[in-house]
Image 1 (cartoon, rainbow, N blue to C red):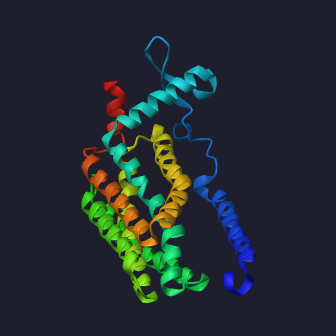
Image 2: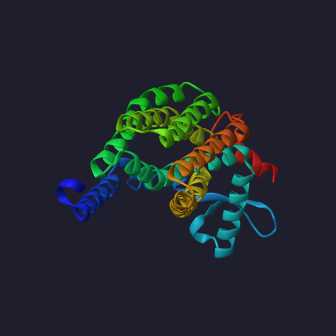
Length: 279
């Protein structure tokens, strides 16, 4: 698109497609309001009032701002005390690091080494996406048949993906770049369904949104500072060095998951619920 219609028009086309996806999402049956399902909407919740006692069946519309804030802080503290949630937050940092490197060091390295332009760079990310689509059905099938933290899927898959990400620093041809990207995509498609399944297993439905938001906040923070940091590192050292540093950081995310995740939860009323009871 960029070579055929120009850079500006390619951005407009991509933006229109993204907007169409958002509009389509709002029309899915799963996203339409269901007034009969008050439990999922969380209208009746449990809060801690000023005297420290639990109060059941409170309508969220009747809470004061202070009670809303206190309830939110209690939930956040419970989430952050959970080793499983700490593991998921650490792992949520991996993808922003990867794409921060993709958009800076990897793209610049490919341009410098093989003279990659818009078409060649597009081929790299197409290889990543296609191979991810190939690996995802297998990963989804295994994730549904494996209980707990699924470390045997997440940690090895992530480490292999990180190793082949590091291999981009030594690639000297378009074929080598495409092969490394394809293997990363397959590994990502293999282990990412396990992360989603584990998140659903160990997170209480009452605070699932807040738990996911903490993961997104960690990732968004890195998405904000990552591209600038990787760009500065590439300028100060080299693109290859920035790629290797990014690979090491991603390995650290997966090792952290392997160390922190306990996988002891047996139902959606997970260790967050247990943590709230202990507190």
